[in-house]
Length: 179
Image (cartoon, rainbow, N blue to C red; front, top):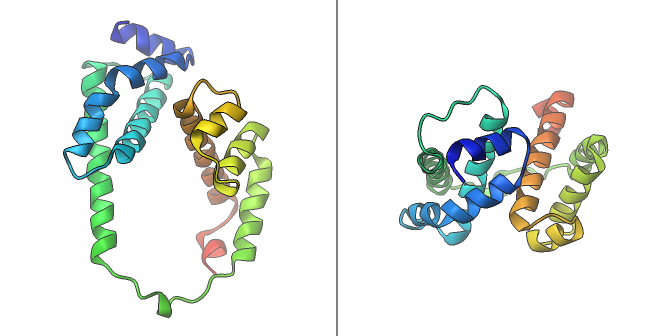
């Protein structure tokens, strides 16, 4: 399949293009991550995020492919991994004394999240419940929800989590969650 055909499939919403890209390019992206202080699991997460970035750009209708898809994905993976390494560096260089941190009032936060969860589409609500509350692995979630594979389930979970985050931010202020 050539790159333009893949972009066209994505524009039509055909998730088979993601499966194809994952199979074709994952090893190259995994080498990038594992050679730069990452694990195989880190590589899966970063590549999944890169595929989502590519999917959303291609679906926007304003995307023009000016390089090979592999080059684009490699660049996105590289940027995402650098951000992740920077984030990890910040967290490890600034120790937090948990003894000075007040205990949060979780009931209020749970109520906020629950209210927003109820506003999601049933399939989004279900996948988030399976993942966060039942702590099921992606392979089992994919099976229960009849996705093609664990990567498709992970993509759907990511999109649903983004939707939930957007709902929470639009209806509640940060102080509602922090107080």
